[in-house]
Length: 117
Image (cartoon, rainbow, N blue to C red; front, side):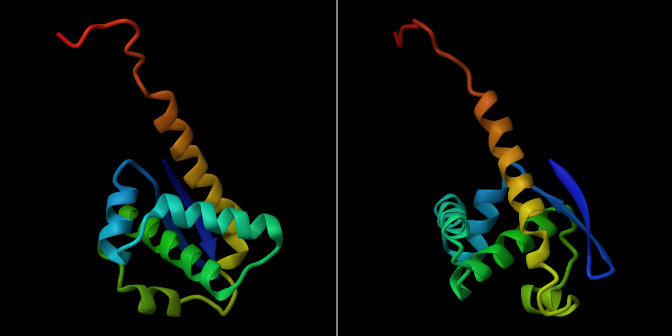
């Protein structure tokens, strides 16, 4: 799934796919599923702490990297935006992640009575 966002006057393409968890784990040595769950829980509680915001930045960066592997490193990439501009796109980023998860879930094959022998 791909989506283009206008973040602080910059067009940013984001992509989420089956490779997202692997790239995230490789870059940040963390599980994107667990981090996304924590982020979602914190949003529901109204608690957007520094840890939650960092998680959002990391997820957004991985999705941007998937869409364009030539983007600069995380700090330089974030530096091109205003102070809170990326956080305004939280619903879009989470929405893209959720669309990707729905696609993965519906693609599961039912085994339905096949034997293993």
